[in-house]
Length: 207
Image 1 (tube, helix red, strand yellow):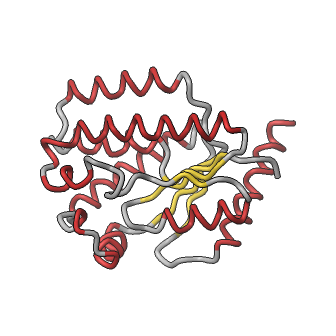
Image 2 (tube, one colour):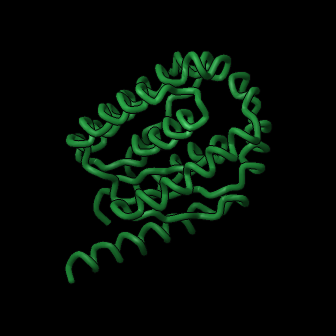
Image 3 (tube, helix red, strand yellow):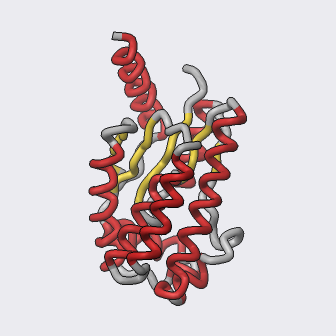
């Protein structure tokens, strides 16, 4: 199998980092992690005051993920990315709908995203780890990060709804594999699904 560029998506706390690492090891490609509290200077401020910090954090994440995506593409080694740049629009749209980002700021964000997208080769596929908002909250509480202590079930339900819309849209241009992740599965099973989907895509292209 040639080098792949794979995005891992899912709600907060579902285990994207763990599965990203395992899939990257299995496929022998680099892994690129989502910025956490240690290296995301906006994250703690965002959860403390979402309305003030939502837009700055979205711009920060847009830049970080764009940089990661360029590293994946230009290295020629492929990679597994823990949350892609396309998912940032999920959060930005949901935060705007919730009144935490102004419409004009959302418009500015989307214009910047569209400009960047001209320089962004798309992932070969996105693997979505599908869990309920309730399970997402349970795992967030289990990992017990201080900055995430204010996350509510209502916030996760709104995010889940935004994700469902996003997956319907993105699947029209990027193949999406949805994996029921309410119970963890062996990584080999997920990798096998990737291989099958990858072959299906290439067989379709050759026809």
